[in-house]
Length: 359
Image (cartoon, rainbow, N blue to C red; front, side):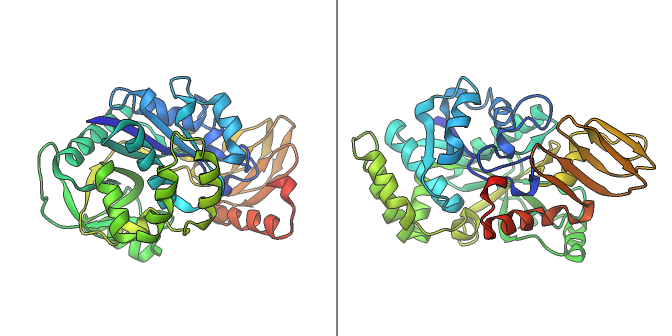
């Protein structure tokens, strides 16, 4: 069975504002110093999935820039452009129908475009195992991450005690998905040994996920089917533009994974971090002797435990502790590290005030 990777690359990366913008979001930035995050994602599954079998789902604002800087092995015909954002369920069904229409029944791996992984060899082994499970069992396979601390910014997957399969790896039935618990609850999850972080990585047969849409999201499926029927015809672009605004806005987690009793999880331990906000940069860059992560022209006195990011001009700090300072050409962010998740609220305020030149 053909293997295809579907990369969800339409997000705005709002918690990385002001560096991440609508037309140049986090996944199109070189944050690690190696390559843009999208290209790192593509290169990471080389050897498990042919790179030419990469399907990327993005939006109109980002499509032109994405085409110009994306990995050269990816076919431009495999870039699916959504006219409006309708969350992950719509993106995934769009890709599943596209793959089935053009390539027949296939194995489909869904990956976010902006995660950071340190042990790529172990990642590929885990992905290979997940593909084998999806192929042999007709189940919806999730990859959960062994938690290393009680994170409150991640979702969790609760799973049963005994594995339902042990070959090629332990496979567990999912009990429930829990969205971003409080600290005390997250502590209990980590100590229980029966919870994993929800990585947003999934593997399934195209036939299995399409059938799940028919069952659990029939309205979304029926609307999207008219797009699928237009693939390869002169009606394709018009159908996408007409139909997409009618699609319900719903995540794959809420729409299908939380409702299905056919979901299993494979555990992964490969140095994963979703780099969701400025305070996560410590997963990529080790702090200096004072606990600072500095990617800027910086001069500091009594500066501790801070993140300083700049665009070339000098940033001078005196007597600060635990701050994020992110300086770009037209905007400056200053906030405590423990408020990093609230950066999204600034983006929402800018939208509300119509200050789109900063988005």
